[in-house]
Image (tube, rainbow, N blue to C red; front, side, top):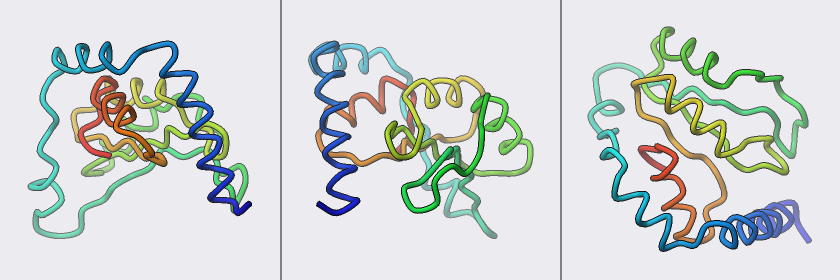
Length: 136
């Protein structure tokens, strides 16, 4: 089994738990009450370099990268520093992320937010919408 295979297997296991707790129809109903996604295209197409800052605690290849006690505070610093968008890792096992991190970042900043994960089903797209992601 490759590292990627192992990651995907873990994603599928974690996803099964979430799907059992919150059926997709419930997610879809919640999504209809969410604000529309921010249009990211103009933000990234503007003049100059567009910066997508990232909230990432660890990686399979590098191990622990950073302690991030407050993703919201980090996101606010990124926004104040001129980031155009914030990428939030939500994969738990290898990257140390969570949907709670996505919630915290979304609540803290006004710029677009990206959910970064290994997307294997449409369920995760609905999750992204419900948790405030503007793109995946």
